Image (cartoon, rainbow, N blue to C red):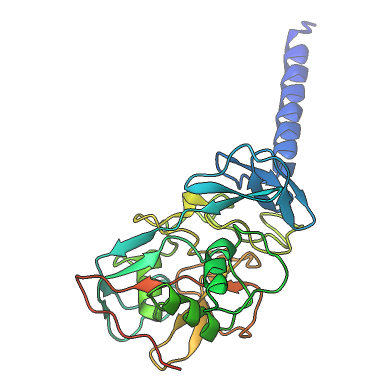
Length: 295
């Protein structure tokens, strides 16, 4: 009997097993999270050359990520997102914008032009307000490039007033995240993956060792078409509802499912929740923004 068919069959079986093993090992690799200039360290992205020691990126810093700059404070170095305001032209936030799984609101909302911080307020940026005694000190010595967390919304408003702005209204935040087309995620309608949002860092799917947020701006692939970063994941963000209540939007590093990360996601957390941060908005010449609340 000709052995050639048997040999060919055996080789095909071996090749199939090899492919399965290869994919199995690929599945065990950690998901891609960090952009050029940042290296994956535990659940975090650290500046190239640094190691994650405890909860802090430390060691010699070779490079930072896109849009970040290097600071040197004593013997410590850190990557911090460049401060920038993104101007948005305003427009109509359609009924049910950002989540087709929910019942649409009764009326579209007209949003006036405004500017918004490109990223969440960092510890480094907040320190200027503390130095000028306009804001309260943060506990401990958090890493400069991380978002400020644990502040009640009233304290967040205090910083935004110092920066000549205020917290965004719910409609402004949603417009920045979803646009007039009602995007489900800041970058588009699909594609929730670890390189676009800092989510699932505590219990998966993006990591199982996380204890806090990542560097602000460490997911540039998740930017809106206008360039606003981190509107899904990393930290949820304080916003102000029409009735004056403060609620948090956008999900955080703790979030694990899409429903917590869509641009319509909202929660009412503890005022000092450690997974909640903030960014500010600012009036621009093209429109008149509603005034900041008085205290």
